[in-house]
View (cartoon, rainbow, N blue to C red):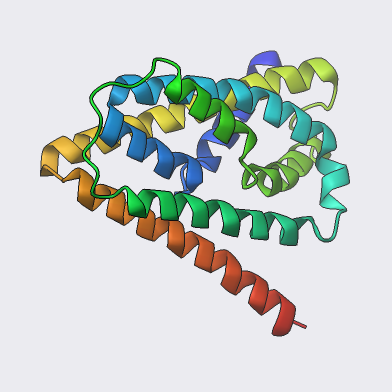
Length: 207
């Protein structure tokens, strides 16, 4: 049962990080601009925070699912987050990548984004409630710790694959840093616009 709980957490969060979002796009940018070593530091720090994040959200999943305006709040947070990240990436798109970075820079960035990760709240609200309600996992303290460890492992594995794939694509097609940064900035702006359009639709057109 312990192994199964860990495995379910790993698979669930691995799938959760497959769609492009602020975390994996930021990771791609770090991999391209700073190298795979810094990317691994970022992933490790982020995954450590993901353990605590998952544990807290799973404890509060049922309560959070009953908060009617939580989805709206998260959407607007994502608009700000994607907008800021898109702007920062856009204005630095022509800057040549630095050759030296502080050993702790990527670790601090991973910890910061681990806490600024609102997209995972609705994901665990739905996934966590489903898994507990259907008794795929228990909602006891030990079970949730094991599940959260699996979640952290799933995040690490998926993001590590993202980093290796980003490095492979850069080397295989000799893509410039400017092109990659510009593309990522456009994606950030596109995601921000998606959340804006979603809220406009829900507020004025959906009855």
